[in-house]
Image 1 (cartoon, one colour):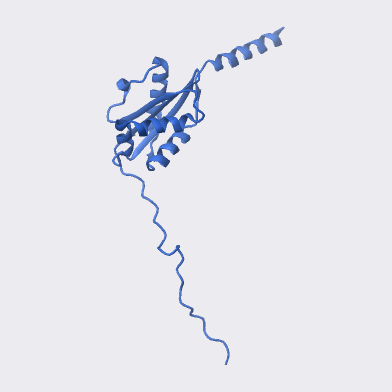
Image 2 (cartoon, one colour):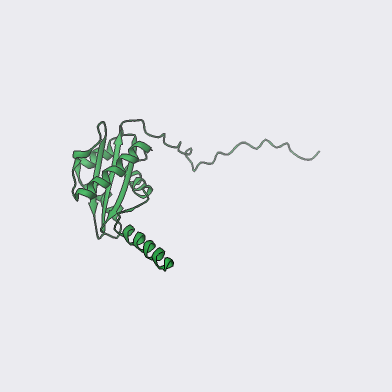
Length: 158
């Protein structure tokens, strides 16, 4: 009998976990924003705020900037039923002048993003704040990046 109780308890825990929103890896969203706009420094505090924001949005089942953290800018979105929800969210932001303006602003050099899936709906938030952007890599020299040096070998023979 005790074995049946343990199995029932484990099943209850697993089933309860199914009702909980699924947290997704955030690098996909951050990478998509960087690929569409430009790279920024990822900030752990902003990342934590973004996680709070998607949880708030999913809980109220609404899009509202009322919970935005002081001193930050944010872009938020939700969608469901798209084959690539992250790309759809970034497309939404590109098509919205206020959101596109925030993500195009090179003065926002720090970012934290989060995605949360609840009942089939994907909730997204990227939180940004002021800061320098990462330095761009130095481009290779013109001409394909290869520099030919003069032949300084001594002549053989003698």
